[in-house]
Image (tube, rainbow, N blue to C red; front, side, top):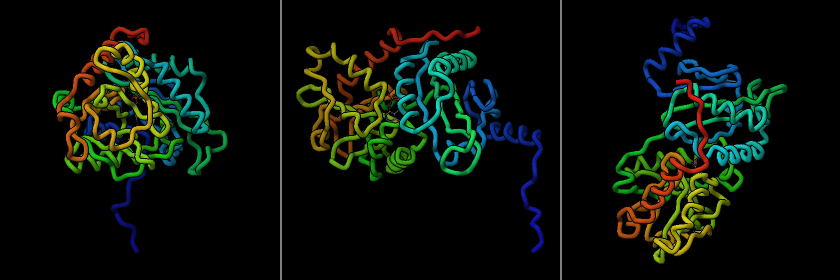
Length: 330
Ligand SMILES: Cc1ncc(COP(=O)(O)O)c(C=O)c1O
């Protein structure tokens, strides 16, 4: 057979740079800075925000990540996100890139270089490049990457009118994988796509015992008919930094709009009978769920506890002692 003249071209380094630029031109992205241990520094041109294909995070999912927020030029609750990052690294048998302090300094330095004063910082640890095998390649150096971007955004309607969710048909991750923030989000992706295809806002995982799990990239919590804030145990759901913080911040509300705060197994039937249901996470913050599987939660309107929790969280993000100043240049 004669060779097809549609065979792909063999490219020079200049061609590759030009093509990466063209790709970003066709689909602009709003990433303001990217650090890569493999590049050896920070780039601000999105065309240069790349990773070698043979990195095992790319083709085997052997990597972990975490996301912290930037609020008014300060990084919020980074230590909690770093604690979880280190836990995920250990469970994933990933070598660290330097010390916790080194990674923290790189995160702060990349944020400073981005100039971004509101948005998100997502950072990854990979087992590194070197082969297409499963176990890390001989001599592989761990990769550390930091991306600064505008953050995920959700419709204003979620907060003013509330979300509509469905129980996903996809199985929940087993505990080890659920509590580890690895780059294996296939169940989460499929759950969210399934909900969107059904005209809904998101899905909810239920565990094998019939207890409520979590949503795609958010935790779930409820307010019972007798005003107790209930959150699922962190056994088979990600220990959300937002949830953990809110469980503390909610305590002063006990005796005012709450009677108690509990972390416990929540059977689906009890959850459906809740007065309020909410989604919690660094990007969504606190958002009311008003309908689940076609049935209203409570009176089908956003409730007062959800609203109060959003207020205390936003206050904490502005004023708490968990803020790190970013040394922006200008
Ligand atoms: C699966 C999953 N659950 C819950 C959360 C909420 O965690 P956090 O509050 O730390 O954003 C996230 C987001 O990171 C997530 O990906």
